[in-house]
Image (cartoon, rainbow, N blue to C red):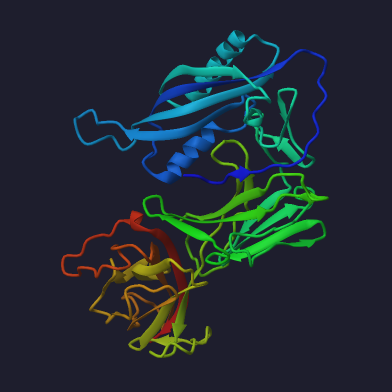
Length: 451
């Protein structure tokens, strides 16, 4: 899965050499790894973690890309071992060195072998090509910015990545914040000095400058933002791109255009979503060729609310007591409505923490007849309505008790042809719906019950 990619250019000055004769060599290799690390590598989220681990910055300049994952047949002749995979990849090593090209190639192959062996049970490395950087190769030496004396260099506030060719902003100068309703990209003014044509995919959305920081925010379904829901890995990823036109001075184009792609990913299971959520701040990923740019994580927001009646327009006073036998109306609500996403409620459970007792009033989207559970709709983008007859557990001491209502929420792609958010459940012989059919969240609320 592509996380982010910078397509950048600008003016830089050539760097003075140390006086020692050096060349920049690049070697590429075909790598095959046998991996059984206890994770199902058919899932995109595990594939991404594996690639990130391979490309951690450890000073070896080895970059793995173009990874493919193939499940191996099981020893017993079954379909496959869920944890046993063959991973094929391309690995590249770039270094500025005084070594001969043959010496460099041998050292590069050893580095690739060592890095692969740290993360795989078996490895095979085959050399594909090795060559020296040339600024006159018709491709600017592969440099994202300027190429001077067969070496790449970067402008102020930028630095070379591990491939010694691509430039990215210096750590800490670009950040992303992923919230329940929007994502915000912040960029130091020194990273982009000229803001001509500075805009997101939707040209009506442009950044503003405040105290030396460019900042632009977009709702998760605005400004041209797109979403991708990976049901198997339970990830929802929102993507946009920041564009800047080339710098023009005295009628001359002095730099190339810029396009900076950024993403927020919502892909973890959360408990008690109705409580205040802690949002994980974004960070810049510069360790892998396929993962350049801005990437952050956050949590989608849901709440569980109690209402006074079936109109669902008046909330129950938090201090009020709910009586046994009365109808308890509740809803599951999304903090923000996002185009392309809907949600459904899979299960709801009433529990008494003091007694350690619990009872399912909704199971696999099916209502419990004994407490009269009602379901307003199977799925919606904003709000789902339910009710049941309030009860206490046998063994309750006293007239009052604290009970907790907890529900699991599944987020789905609204354009899908089928799935839990669309298919009417079979409630006779009920099946357990797989959690990998969408993004799963948990929401709960505590209330006081009296006889």
